[in-house]
Amino acid sequence: MKNSNSSKSPLSIPLHSVSIYLLALTFLIYSAGLLDVIMHSDGLKIYLDITRALLLLLFLLTSIKVTPYDSKVLMFCLYALLCVTIFHDMFILEIATGSLVALTISKKKPTIYLKPAIIATLAVVIPAMFLAKMGIINSVVFIAPGTADNTLTAASKDTFGFWHPNQITLLVAGCLLTSFYIGNKKLLVFCMLTYAVLLESTISRTFLPIPILIVLYTVLPSNNKIVRSCFLLGTVVISIFATLASLVTSLPLILKSTLTPENYIIADKILSYRLQIIERYMEDLTLFELVTGWSPIKHELDSAYINTIFSQGYLIYLAVTLGLFYIQFVAVKHKMIKEAMVISLFMLIANFETPIGASSLIFIVALLSIIKTIKHNSNINKFRNIAMTSHATITAQSRQ
Image (cartoon, rainbow, N blue to C red; front, side, top):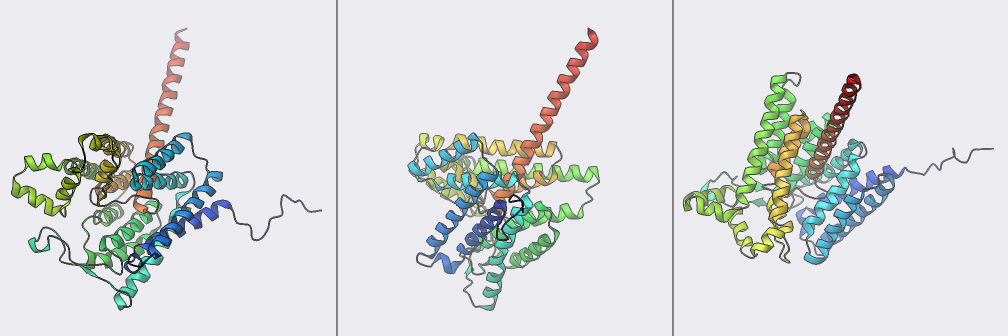
């Protein structure tokens, strides 16, 4: 007689494997949805977004059985849904779903989730680049603003079949950073070569620090304490610059009153005219709405920091900005090189792009680094408290 517990159907698939495939499909659909032909197709983009949302929901539902979420996470999700319902705030919803995905991955081995996500993204990017070069799909040459003034912008950028050149660079840069984070050398080399091809035609300033730091991390001797300290110090410099740049751009009116009109125009051109856009958007809001975020008007532009102001208000923005800086400092303090590097890069990129959401590899990897840093710091503090308690107990007993 056979034991019923030991017999399994040959078609049975572990629940966590299903969740891995579901997550990879969301990255595939998200990447495909950024193609120019789909963006300008009536209804197709909407159907893809709905499909991605349903797959993401299935992923989270299957993951709840494997890795239950605590009450704080569920409360944050309810808050995000409330913001969507009342203020139509999609930015906070992207943060919430991305955070859920990162929390799920952090409770398992990140590689088993992130590697398929990278491959799924590249499965769209590589064919699109090939078809664009062959002339099979349309690849628009994007003329960057400020080109005539030569203000640190490329003369033209190839979109490689995507609706904007920054989108394909964001996807490849995310794959590159994630390959580095999980330590997959084959994917890292492949993504680096792909990025090099893109760099010739897109010349994206925003994501260029990613390959630079990865190369430095790879070639520098990791066992040398001085080199490690200098590298960590470099990530601190990046985080300081990113924080200051965020604080400055978040107050364009103060910056305008501080600089001369000529210097303000130069700064605005270097930032691709973000200052005047932020200034115009802020004029639509009252002081109360700016501080609290309680407004039906939800502007969005290519800056995660500024979008946080329009979404949740200036107070939450300050808490997030200073909180990121503190966590990056903690990672440096504990000599967590990869985490310190990833967090500092995310802080820098967040000034000029919005790498937010459940389908943003940069956002997921940054959150994984933040979660790991917080857990590591918490464990060290626990061990320190236990050691201090034990020492105090031993001392008290010895005195008796």
